Length: 104
Image (cartoon, rainbow, N blue to C red):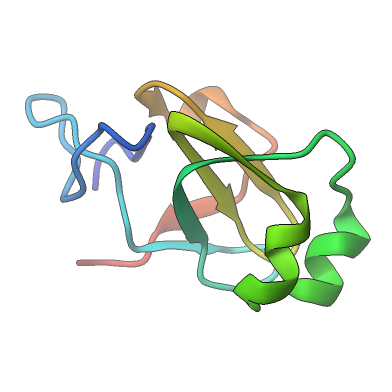
């Protein structure tokens, strides 16, 4: 993917390009070396913190405690970072995330 896009649940998955703006579903974090999980139609609760993800990734049953249903959104998380996204977003606009395409 180049550029790498994040997006809400209505954004299609695939290899993202400038022409074909698709969200990457093969994301990997270069900081914690975890695969990034994504959850359609959910956002993260504002009370989420680093320790919550560090202790609970990737177990969905534990993560659900801080997931809020929101149609059209997508919740992303690895073991050290998390984001809730509503619309197509270029990953380069968020300098704090260390996520890259893990290859399709």
